[in-house]
Amino acid sequence: MKPLDLWAHEVRRAGPAALAGAPALVLLMTLLAILGARIGSRESTTAFMLAGALEMVIPLITGMAAASSLGRDQAVELQLTLPVGYRSTVLRRLAVTTGWTGLCAATGSAVLALGGWWALLPDAPRGLAVQLTWLAPALWLAALGLLASAAFGSAVAATTTVAFVWVAEQVVAGPLQASLPSRLLYLFATTRGTVPGDWTANRVVLLCTAVLLVAAAWPLLGRDERVLGGEKE
Image (spheres, rainbow, N blue to C red):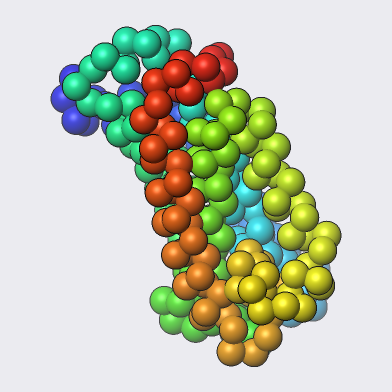
């Protein structure tokens, strides 16, 4: 199979459900921006809601897609015998869903920039750093989803793990931001706030620990018995 055919196959395997969430969110963000301007709502409120959609919803979509990356292959036993390892297949699949979500998120970020919404958020970053608003938490939750999927061999358990972490960070935001270690791992530091000067360190720590989560998942993905034991559709 040619490389282009492999990527096209992974796009089809991702399915419409995994690919439709991000563009639907961007469309809703655009409609919200237009509606907010039409009805005269407070610009700062609209800006917060738009930024929150990027920082909170985009990572959840990405993490859920990564958590369900295993268990989609009906002939996984055959794939394990191919020269191209199954880990490469999973990472390619993850790149398709994460890349597509990232492209949509960048479009949503452009909507905020063109509408002047970023300027209304006093603690928001400026320039190219605004992309880290969604990128850092999205990659972290995607890495967590991949690790949970590889560790549990169950899409249900993996997606539940991602959802639990996402909800927990929403519910106990205050305590998580009260201490330095947990504050640096807090996913929603842009819209839910953080200590002044900690934002950049928070984004860097999230990116670095995402790499560690992927590294932890890598050897698990190489165990045939764990992959064969995963759920299949």
